[in-house]
Length: 533
Image 1 (tube, rainbow, N blue to C red):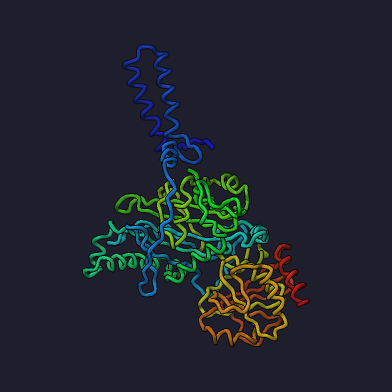
Image 2: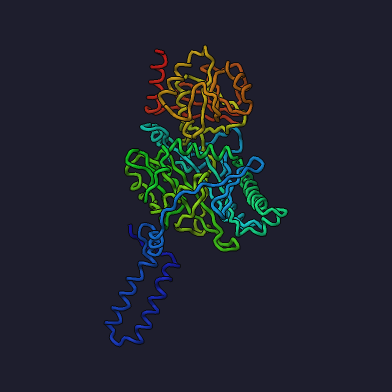
């Protein structure tokens, strides 16, 4: 695709040499016709390296990218410091990952029909101020949101659910991370000041100090931030592999995957002139999973004029995905696919990606609501959408009240957040066969029955709730019951026919509950097969 990038700076870069050639040719070329030909040809040719964009980049940028070669993966070295994973990426980069979630253990969010989110966003302008705020020089700050369209082969419900949500500027189910990276050679004095004679320890303390400052800023903005432990880093890597058919193990020049699998992945970047506001449409890309990363870098050495760039890694089964992405302003990162993947997989050393960067003041991205919206409950009467998100490992109990079919639909949607769920129902529970059949039908690595594995949530009945809490008091639980149980119900989703009432300690919201045919297909088969067991 060819277009004109008519910014003032690029027009000046084209016009000044043309004027200079016209003046010089006027002095040395006696013929007016020859002078006009020389100036005209130069003016046209000079358009290509300065003003004309091809596939979203200038000629110079395209030449530079075509000289890039795909680099092999390099694993990180990991150290644990007071429960936090400090990653050594290659020989010169040290990083810390942080997961961003809602501030409250149970969070209810509404999105209006015109896309206004009721919860706070992450302000990149505030993050950019941290790049050069202290003696610790930050190389980059990256905010990555992992979101979902669907999570199983042939499972089309995610597409339909996304359509029923309408246009929302936030990933519905998903998780968010912020990565702070510092370069060793830029922080020698900071490491020496903190190391007490041990440079390695000083370097680790320097990156942790940078992460602590960033954590304060994000939490002041209304979010909860957790420094990732080694276990969380390992879990994140395993989670990505489980949900992507290990597609990142099969890199190619323009994407990931081979002929033996329908699942492919592509590293993409916004073409020149595409604003971050256009990212609202990126969530509609036909993907199993997508990773949207916004990276902030200092620009000048003193941190003035910070730069911003965006990257999308799309895992998809749609053969027309690249063409659809192109219509949304995205282009392939050719010969840089592994570099793109390395930016989102914590167990792999990150590699720089050659792509356009823009001044933050010109392209100020607002990252809505880090951590994703959570479980989609349904559309509201005002034309918006209602979501509820529960943070795992907080000891929180969420009640699902209503028919077992409604519970199963809600669990299907919760799986889109990539949280693992163990179902532990008493042996005499009449719905055990139905839940076992749902596990068999979905065949998801995230959903298990009577498993002893570590999980984000345990699903149980009111009778089994006490045992579940005794086994792990800090584990979040989901209690399912067809009638209101005789226990405290601070947090609940009550399904009454086509109405869902969401109640927390501080608020109550109502939405329409209308499962899609695809969702009900799994539930109907589970009930039919489970009742005959």
